[in-house]
Image (cartoon, rainbow, N blue to C red; front, top):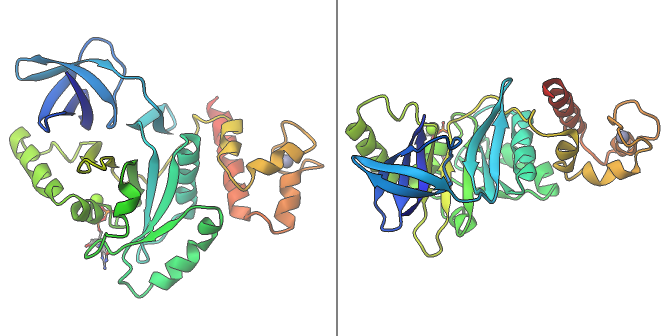
Length: 289
Ligand SMILES: Nc1nc2c(ncn2[C@@H]2O[C@H](COP(=O)(O)OP(=O)(O)O)[C@@H](O)[C@H]2O)c(=O)[nH]1
Ligand SMILES: [Mg+2]
Ligand SMILES: [Zn+2]
């Protein structure tokens, strides 16, 4: 049988089957860790299923911490970054999501939530530079209207990411009304404490048009040390085209003579914070190498 990993909990996985049913599965043998979005082969065993194989993945969405890479989701085609006017926006974190999305060849889209709040026009202004980079902003009010978001989800395999308090859970509940009851039923069946430690949950869209959205817990840090300096640079749409014009192949775009990136910076073509982040990420990457 084949299925889709929709929930992960240590080495236990909830797998959705083609007929809509769900099966609690364990991982057989020495297979590596799986993530939501993985397509798997399963065998029925007493009390559930055993995952016997994982289909080749289109891509993997990772972050890293000081010690290792952390797999967030598999087969992702879009990252949705949620923002709101009433929570201090950490733009360095937001830019890290963008880098992670680009490195995984995913489309990145911003959600500006809580459109009903008075601070919203200021948020809209703040997100304009991202529009200029080509990252669309979708405006929502998770509490009463998520219609604008729906067309962006159809046929896409998305990960929803955001700082705590931006409205991720409210968005998920509005988009997937059954999610609330589902979560309650699961925690009832397995005893309390289960879903506080659940790392990610995948919500299926009706098919057609199909697609899914993965809800991950809020993360205060988002390490990218697993990416090489070249991969990091390639993930900056504004900077990547310039580096071919730097005099030195290994230019760090700092004080090197003949640096095309510094030149663009002084001419106001790139944002200083974006270059600062690239330099920070390259430094973090070389520390972990
Ligand atoms: N005014 C307003 N409040 C919202 C909206 N969406 C979410 N909230 C509120 O923001 C708070 C945080 O929402 P929550 O979904 O728990 O955020 P999460 O931490 O990202 O999952 C809650 O009090 C929500 O009721 C919205 O569109 N407008
Ligand atoms: Mg939440
Ligand atoms: Zn340079």
